[in-house]
Length: 559
Image (cartoon, rainbow, N blue to C red; front, side, top):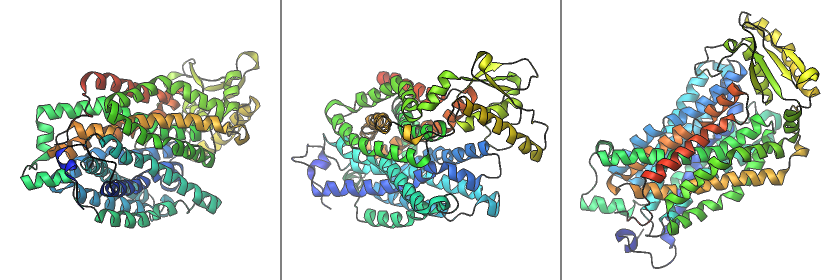
């Protein structure tokens, strides 16, 4: 493949995007779409995964385990960034992200082959977590390679536009995973939850073959090739990137002033919005996926819009504006989602607010990462049942030693359901005691007008899609220009290593743990909107740090 001189010496391209550039963007983006598809299948199927691999614990703990296994892939992403970033700066961009896609594809395929907990016991979740860790390592090396590779092919003045196509891949990968899951659910019906969930994972073998073939056609980036020919490659990328004070400081600032806020807006606007509709608002999974898929289709073109705009007005102001808008509007937007997706729930909360009256000492923070605790106090029993039903509540302290009560409504017309002390009961007896309590609670909630599920005929579909599209557009604001911004912040000889670490720390840790942290906040407080404080707080932090300490880069040469 021949590269025009303007790519090498930084002069502006004389015309539009040529065939060679289109091929680079298409090959890099398509492979990355497939890789994100693999990664997000797990998140989209968290509820099914919980039943298949974590059935040895109670339902609430099993679901948290499933979220934690999802988060495990995010936890190791920074280590993948270090491993493959170093490799990319030493031996080349192309070879590195060829390796990462092979690891990702094989790991995803093997998830579809794993036996369930019922078949092999604890070995099943252990194997699942190992494969999730391999996926996280692979994605940690993938993004930096693809973004750097495309940016180093782009002419001056078009890096935002070119790299924005890479930015669409995560959303398109999520969309592809949702569409494949929907198709399998429709075709397989009730059998999807028993064995049909494996098909989307097994299909990754086909996507892997296509991706590897495409990437084998690529050549090395011209910037890396030039450094190789002139002998200016780094011999110790990790040492240069993280022991030199100036670059180390820049890595830290890029994390807190760019990628942390970008990450929580990305996951808040797509994953948490989907989780909120399914788990909190009780919208049927198929309907929620369709609503989010429509929003993704409508919002995805704005990745390119904001990427191209960043070539004209700068990356920094667009990314930080998206973070600020998210922080200012998340609460009203998610409250509007409740209004339009489950209006019966909104009416019931207004007319018959739910209160948990319990001794504070009897209430646990129901977050158990190792599955050793049993939440069986009367307070925990009440809160667990309400959380499963998607019913918001407030906490009121009762006298010490009192059995927890769930009070639905206020005054003399309030309905009261007593919980029970389960801490000392054997497991079979505890289960027998739980059934009548849950049945009584559901009956009382039904009497007060709380819907067991969102009424599909009452959903205002255009408004829900519009709200979700707005959230996706915020995602495109923070994510569309960020690849070009990160690439331009760091010197070419250590670019792959330097940009990958803050990106994956931000997205892997700040973003990846968002569903788990936010869900725990909701259960602890009883407020269905409490989980939003996490993304709002992180986004505001990024606005302040990025605004004060990070420079604008859109006119910066790459050499």
